[in-house]
Length: 283
Image 1 (cartoon, helix red, strand yellow):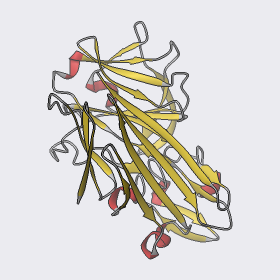
Image 2 (tube, one colour; image 1 turned 45 degrees about the horizontal axis):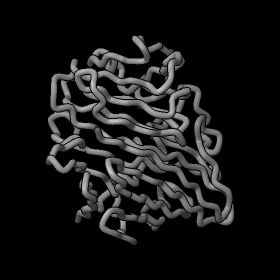
Image 3 (cartoon, one colour; image 1 turned 90 degrees about the vertical axis):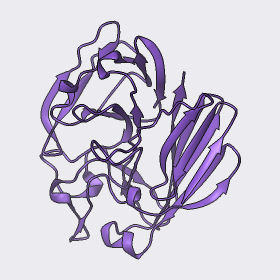
Image 4 (tube, helix red, strand yellow; image 1 turned 180 degrees about the vertical axis):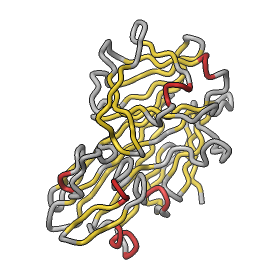
């Protein structure tokens, strides 16, 4: 089942499975979200919860018991309920159940709110702790933006001038190796070689946004001012680029197995609510 919202400028379509955005088109019928061709990657914009990235051996320990979570968690593969809708907004909800408790023994509700305002799509995440104790979690976005022209015609311009140091992944985990993106006037030239070792993982950034440039002109801007971490990813020869605001990232090679002590994890107090959001601006 799908839900569509629209305004005079944009139309967004969301699958109830995973509450996943799969289309964002303007009033000229131009599509900005990757079409999910399985030749490259069968997703569009999955929601990452209750972990971002991978756990070592896909395993963690809680109360002396081992639990297993696959890469990026389970929310992206579960059916959400549409709990509120207007012409230009929609709110989806996923609550804990017997299936989630086997993988993640914490009671929660995850709400995802999509809202169109002029040429912007705002995507908000709300995590509600239903426990009488703390719960650990990460949450992140994974939107893939369609690149209709040659990949070499696209650049990324960061909001601020800074040293763009990123961590390399090793077998899906954060390694001890870092590299720095080369820039010219805060602009990174895209090429597939950048992603030979999987995603670029930025643990810290000064910039609160970045803009994808198409032939040096603004194409899409992603505003992630509330998010401390960022991933950038594509696949060899794929006509898309993923800009991924995150709270958290994969296990490090020295992980402890305790989810509460995982690097980058969020801890939500009993009966409290966590709110965050990011924005996609179309030019």
